[in-house]
Amino acid sequence: MNGFKNSAVYQIYVKSFCDSNGDGIGDLNGIRSKLSYIKSLGVDYIWLTPFFPSPMVDNGYDVSDYTAVNPMFGTMADCEAMIAEADELGMGFMFDMVFNHTSSEHEWFKKALSGDPKYMDYYIFRDSVDGKAPTDWIASFGGPAWDYVESLDKWYLHLFDPKQPDLNWENPEVREELKNVIRFWKDKGVKGFRFDVLNLISKPASFDLPAGPAHRFCKDGWHVHEFIREMVTDTGLEDMVTVGEMASTTLDNCIRYSNPRNHELSMCFSFHHLKVDYRNGDKWALMPPDLVSLRSLFKAWQEEMEKGGGWNAVFWDNHDQPRVVSRFGDEGKYWKQSAKMLATFIHLLRGTPYIYQGEELGMTNAHFASIDQYRDVEAINYFHILLDRGETEEDALKVLGERARDNGRTPMQWTAGKNAGFSEAEPWIGLPDNYGRINVEAEESDPDSILNYYRELTRLRKESSIIAEGGIRFLDSGNEKVFAYERLLAKDRMVVVCNFSAEEEKIADILPEGRVVCGNYADPPLHSDKLRPYEAVAVEALQS
Ligand code: TEU
Ligand code: CA
Image (cartoon, rainbow, N blue to C red; front, top):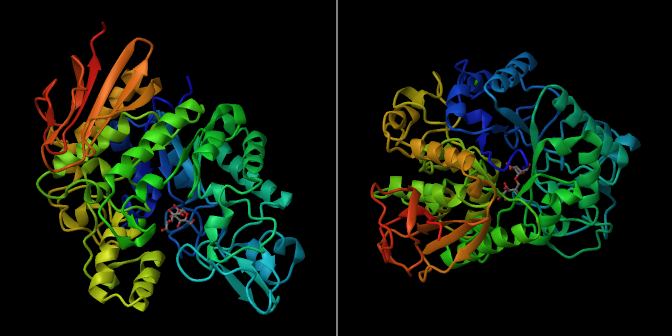
């Protein structure tokens, strides 16, 4: 069996996890102080968001040096100690490789700007077309995707912020530089990698293309599989755990990225299921979640990835997403039940589950009331774009309150004390005011807490090969608010049923006679024709 199928991964947003030196910013020594907590969650890998030197325009996803530690987060010695200490506890780190682009402060880009042809070919510079940018493309954080450099009389491509110029992967020297980065961290004892927007690295051969969002024209590009395979085989990544972040990708491509026969990655993140509340596909236009498409996306991705021999990374939350309990669950009366239901649904799927810091506590959105509380470049840009579109300030803040990435970036809630036990000093970003109730300390002492339920879920995956390795089929529950699937391995069968609504819901007779594996109500009813609000239950069928 592949080493990662019965594993779970914990994601840490370094800046917001734990501050050890009282400057209001999370750091590597903070992580070291919490390793036994992370171990207690039953995870095997820890994905750290980038902590490398960076001007922090995009909070570290703008890297100016791939093989050093940003002094804001610690030293190389801290990093080495952190790796060794996790290793002793039987956990491995996955570091975050942002290889689609660098920071504009990276020495390669500085040399490019000075006109050095070697380094200009590290990036994507093009001449003007009719006195304008080569294409009318919009970058991911708003604004045009090309920036003009007067001294060179050329434009450079950036799919994200202008301070994140895209690398030219067509250039073999670029690919060699990036392989050396992987070798460097491998030598330090890192056990795996997460690759940022990896399906955007291969750009079109010609830019004679229509207007639109830039990433639409660059996703799953013509050389992408070749580039990934080369990087993986040349650096010996096949023995490690690797996950690629795939923006607006397709199922067929994700099968290719993650089927071991292709020598690419262990698994992929895809995001279609996190767009079911975007009105007309616009992240900045609110709509209640469309549960019918949510279910059909999961059904398609789960069943088809299995048929194609691919492997999913399964998740709700990360540092780019609002909090799932606020989004698909209930922050109020059914806070606990809904957080556990959402966890059950993800953790019993076929794929490797990712837990994002604070998700295991049921942490909520930030509830910021003023634009001054936001920190993310995307949130601030879109606030102004929404005002320009004619929305009132109140409406724009309402949209940010549900959609901004900052909702997932508030400090980890450790205690009910000062700054939630995250820092002695004022944190770099504010906290939601519910940390007195939602925090590690409170949930440690409650056997029925969300935290302890997550521990049970990771333990189940370790103990049960049907969860780790079984096949999956979605079932028709007879109710579009109730999602159901069965896991199958040899003669064994397990049925999982999850109610995504705050009401009691009627269901068809799909729960088998058998043993309750887990559930979020104290006395899960079997063979019942209805589920309670946000109820989730998994039943292992009796052998016939
Ligand atoms: O995110 C890639 C990405 O396309 C989105 O998740 C993006 O943040 C969202 O669509 C904006 O609405 C990755 C990183 O996870 C993110 O934090 C970085 O900002 C981005 O790449 C650039 O490196
Ligand atoms: Ca600090």
